[in-house]
Length: 185
Image 1 (cartoon, one colour):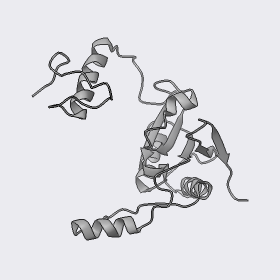
Image 2: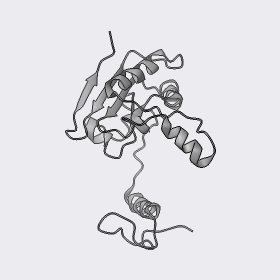
Image 3: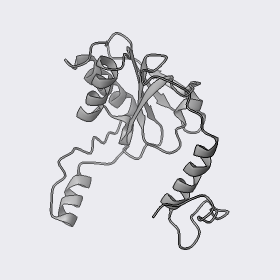
């Protein structure tokens, strides 16, 4: 069943979906309204600024606004913690080799949900569902050190062509400012 803007009720004042609808229904309705005014910008998939930004999935991070970016400027790759995992390397490799990016910006943030989480999370999941997750939690206790580790993973990946402009930052969720993290010397 398709949902048109005229069939779906408006969201409640608190942002939640009205009774009988889901948040996804609200998103589909919003998309229909967006599509009504949409006009193809005629952009290429190659980012204008030739940069890939790797960041945490945290809903408080509005990366385009925080970095002064426009649609089409960058590739944005997000996961829990903004940690450089095999899948991030996969995305960065495609971004560089197939779509022309040359710079990598890594962004972690204060008050991250992965701070203080441990691999016990995986063990608890295994006990609950009867199957061990195939992935690591990648939790950390030190933001700066984890940014350094992520920078190192990018810089040492044999799959990436461009490693000379890899920089890491911590975004402060209370001030909106970035603090640059420098590699250990």
